[in-house]
Length: 367
Ligand code: T4K
Image 1 (cartoon, rainbow, N blue to C red):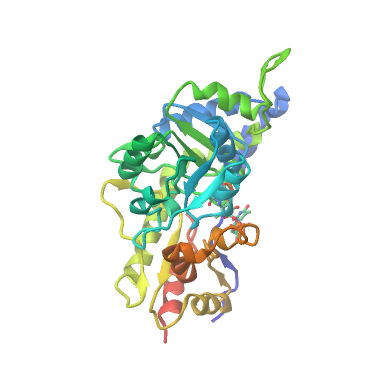
Image 2: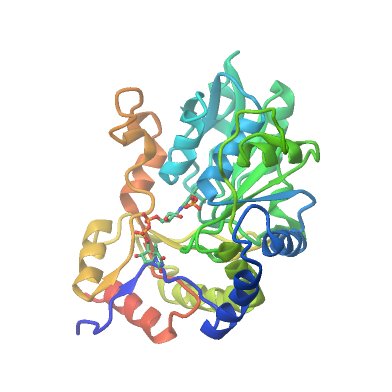
């Protein structure tokens, strides 16, 4: 039976309408709309607490945050990264004048294969940009060892890992810096938005200048910066959404468990095994169809017939994009290529009801 209402891969979490409206009143009174206003500063403090992050700067969106985080390290040369990600990761490297070098991923959790990084290092390598894809945390210990051995920076794309912890520590404590996305489609949203969490407190001024035109005083501009500022409407949305974040993550956890209960152990269907020391935020529900009686595209088509739209995040791999295809070949990262052909992210959001999850699983499993 076709669903009346479409079910999409995700749906933004919103606070009660009146709460957000109430937050807007002081903005009208002060007419202070952007440029590090009161809500911006408040959100920054609250997020530092929630994310257990010592140093944090807010940005207008996750991509700009990543681009500026990379820029802040003043790098030159090659950056080892993963092709199994959203366009943003690679574009941020390229738009900084750096050359991405693609490392394959692991079939177990789709993060960068730390055992393949070292063979890609050349005298030009300056950094590693791994991705905690779907909120699966990279093997940070091994990555850090390699970085220390060769003097490389590690900048994590943690767009999917908001609120996650490893042995009680915020995931932003890994590497030199991490970028988090607060886009409408994420666990926590500020409509559009993002943050950089970083180790060295001295990076604070640099990031601030990069996102504010390099202005250092009323009559001085010392750096060639851009505009990456989060505005007050975004920050207000963040403050409202943050109140509900724990219960939203809990709802996502329950739905994930329900999916797992129905799909785990089915021949040809693979789910990522969770690690015990990690507190997850359940950002996505990726399912790999590998030897199942329907291939990924057939499952996708079947769900679409029922007005349910999962997404093929991340297909194609970045090294198969038109804009990069003259320089790279997806065959060079065979695991990423294979996973991208079999992966489907199923609908997952806090307000999704359990009956819809049951129905999605029935549609996938029925003969
Ligand atoms: N690094 C990684 C690894 C990332 O995944 C991303 C973003 C970034 C960096 C960059 O961070 P940001 O600059 O975006 O902060 C979406 C998101 O736009 C993007 O944030 C996200 N990753 C990516 C994986 O997914 P699209 O093009 O697939 O979005 P779209 O418009 O098709 O929306 C997907 C579904 O979300 C819709 O079917 C319904 C729902 N939705 C969408 C919007 C825009 C809502 O419920 N509300 C909304 O306002 O990229």
